[in-house]
Structure formats: structure tokens, C-alpha cells
Amino acid sequence: MAKVSPLMLAPIGIFAGFVALAAVGMFRDNPRELPSTRVGGIAPEVTEESLIAFPGVTPEMLGNGQVTLVNFWASWCPPCRAEHPKLLEMAADGVPIVGVNFRDTEAPATQYLTDDGNPFVGVAFDPAGRSAIEWGVTAPPETFIIAGDGTVLFRYIGPLIGSDYENRFVPALNEALSK
Image 1 (cartoon, rainbow, N blue to C red):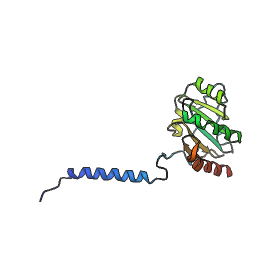
Image 2: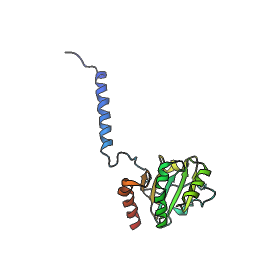
Image 3: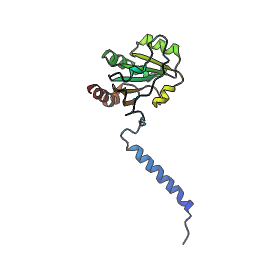
Image 4: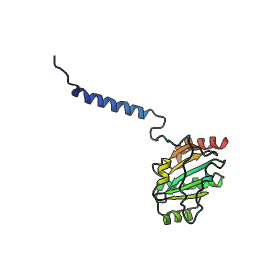
């Protein structure tokens, strides 16, 4: 009878490990979304630097007693442009939105808001992406729902359009607004 070396069994063990990891990933609630370490905690600060033509973001804007959205965007981002009409609509409906322009340059960002309208109560300018790192943002656009006490209630990755927006973001926003 031939003796089996443990090294011969190693590939089978490695393969079984990969299969187990894939199975766990496939059966998560939303396998495309990374979990946010910010949900349930107090919203991080946002840079005080702002686009010169627009009001900046103050700490009082988050945790001011009312539900507020924080939207990370960039002028060069096509999905950000796609969601822009929805942001304008929500702002017109009285939902305060803080905008964080990141990894962008000031002139195109200012021109974008001047041409297409400014839905934001305050606009932070974060060219190095430091605030985005603090918030755990992976790519624009990302939107966070912040409770009146400054707690992060929900993180939405992607543009605020389509069925995923309707099925996940809108119910989360409505629930936050109803409290």
C-alpha cells in the first residue's frame, strides 16, 4: 500500500477552502455590497474645505435634529451625473443633503453645480479623498442617511436611480424620516 504524502492533499484542502469562501459570499444578503463600519455609529467629520462659490459643511449640519443625506460625488463621474436630478428633487422636497466633492478639481466641480443646479445645503471639497477614506467610501457616488442625532443609519453605494434605489434606499429613507 502506497503512503500518501500530506503535500499531495494540500491542493484538495486549498480548493475546499476556496469553495467554502465562495459559498459564504454568494449567500450574503447583498453579495455586491461591502459592509460599512460606519452604520450604527456617529458620522465622521467632513473636511471644512469647501468649493469657493458654495457654502461649506459645518459639524452642525450632521446631528442637527433632522435626517440628512451625505452624498459623495465628483464632476467626472457619469453615475453622479445620472443621479443628480434625483438629488435636486429630494432637495426640493426638503431633504437636506450635504455634498462631498472628492478626488476632483475645483473648477469643473464648481462649473458642474453652477450649470446643473446645486442640491446641497453645504459642499465640502476633498481633492485628496481624506473624508472619503474616513467614511469608508469606495467610489462615487455613495450616499449615507444620517439620523437627527448624527448616527449613520444607512449606506448606499451607486447612483440614486433604478430598481435597487427604489427597493433599498427609498424604504430606508422613508423609515428614517418617519421617526
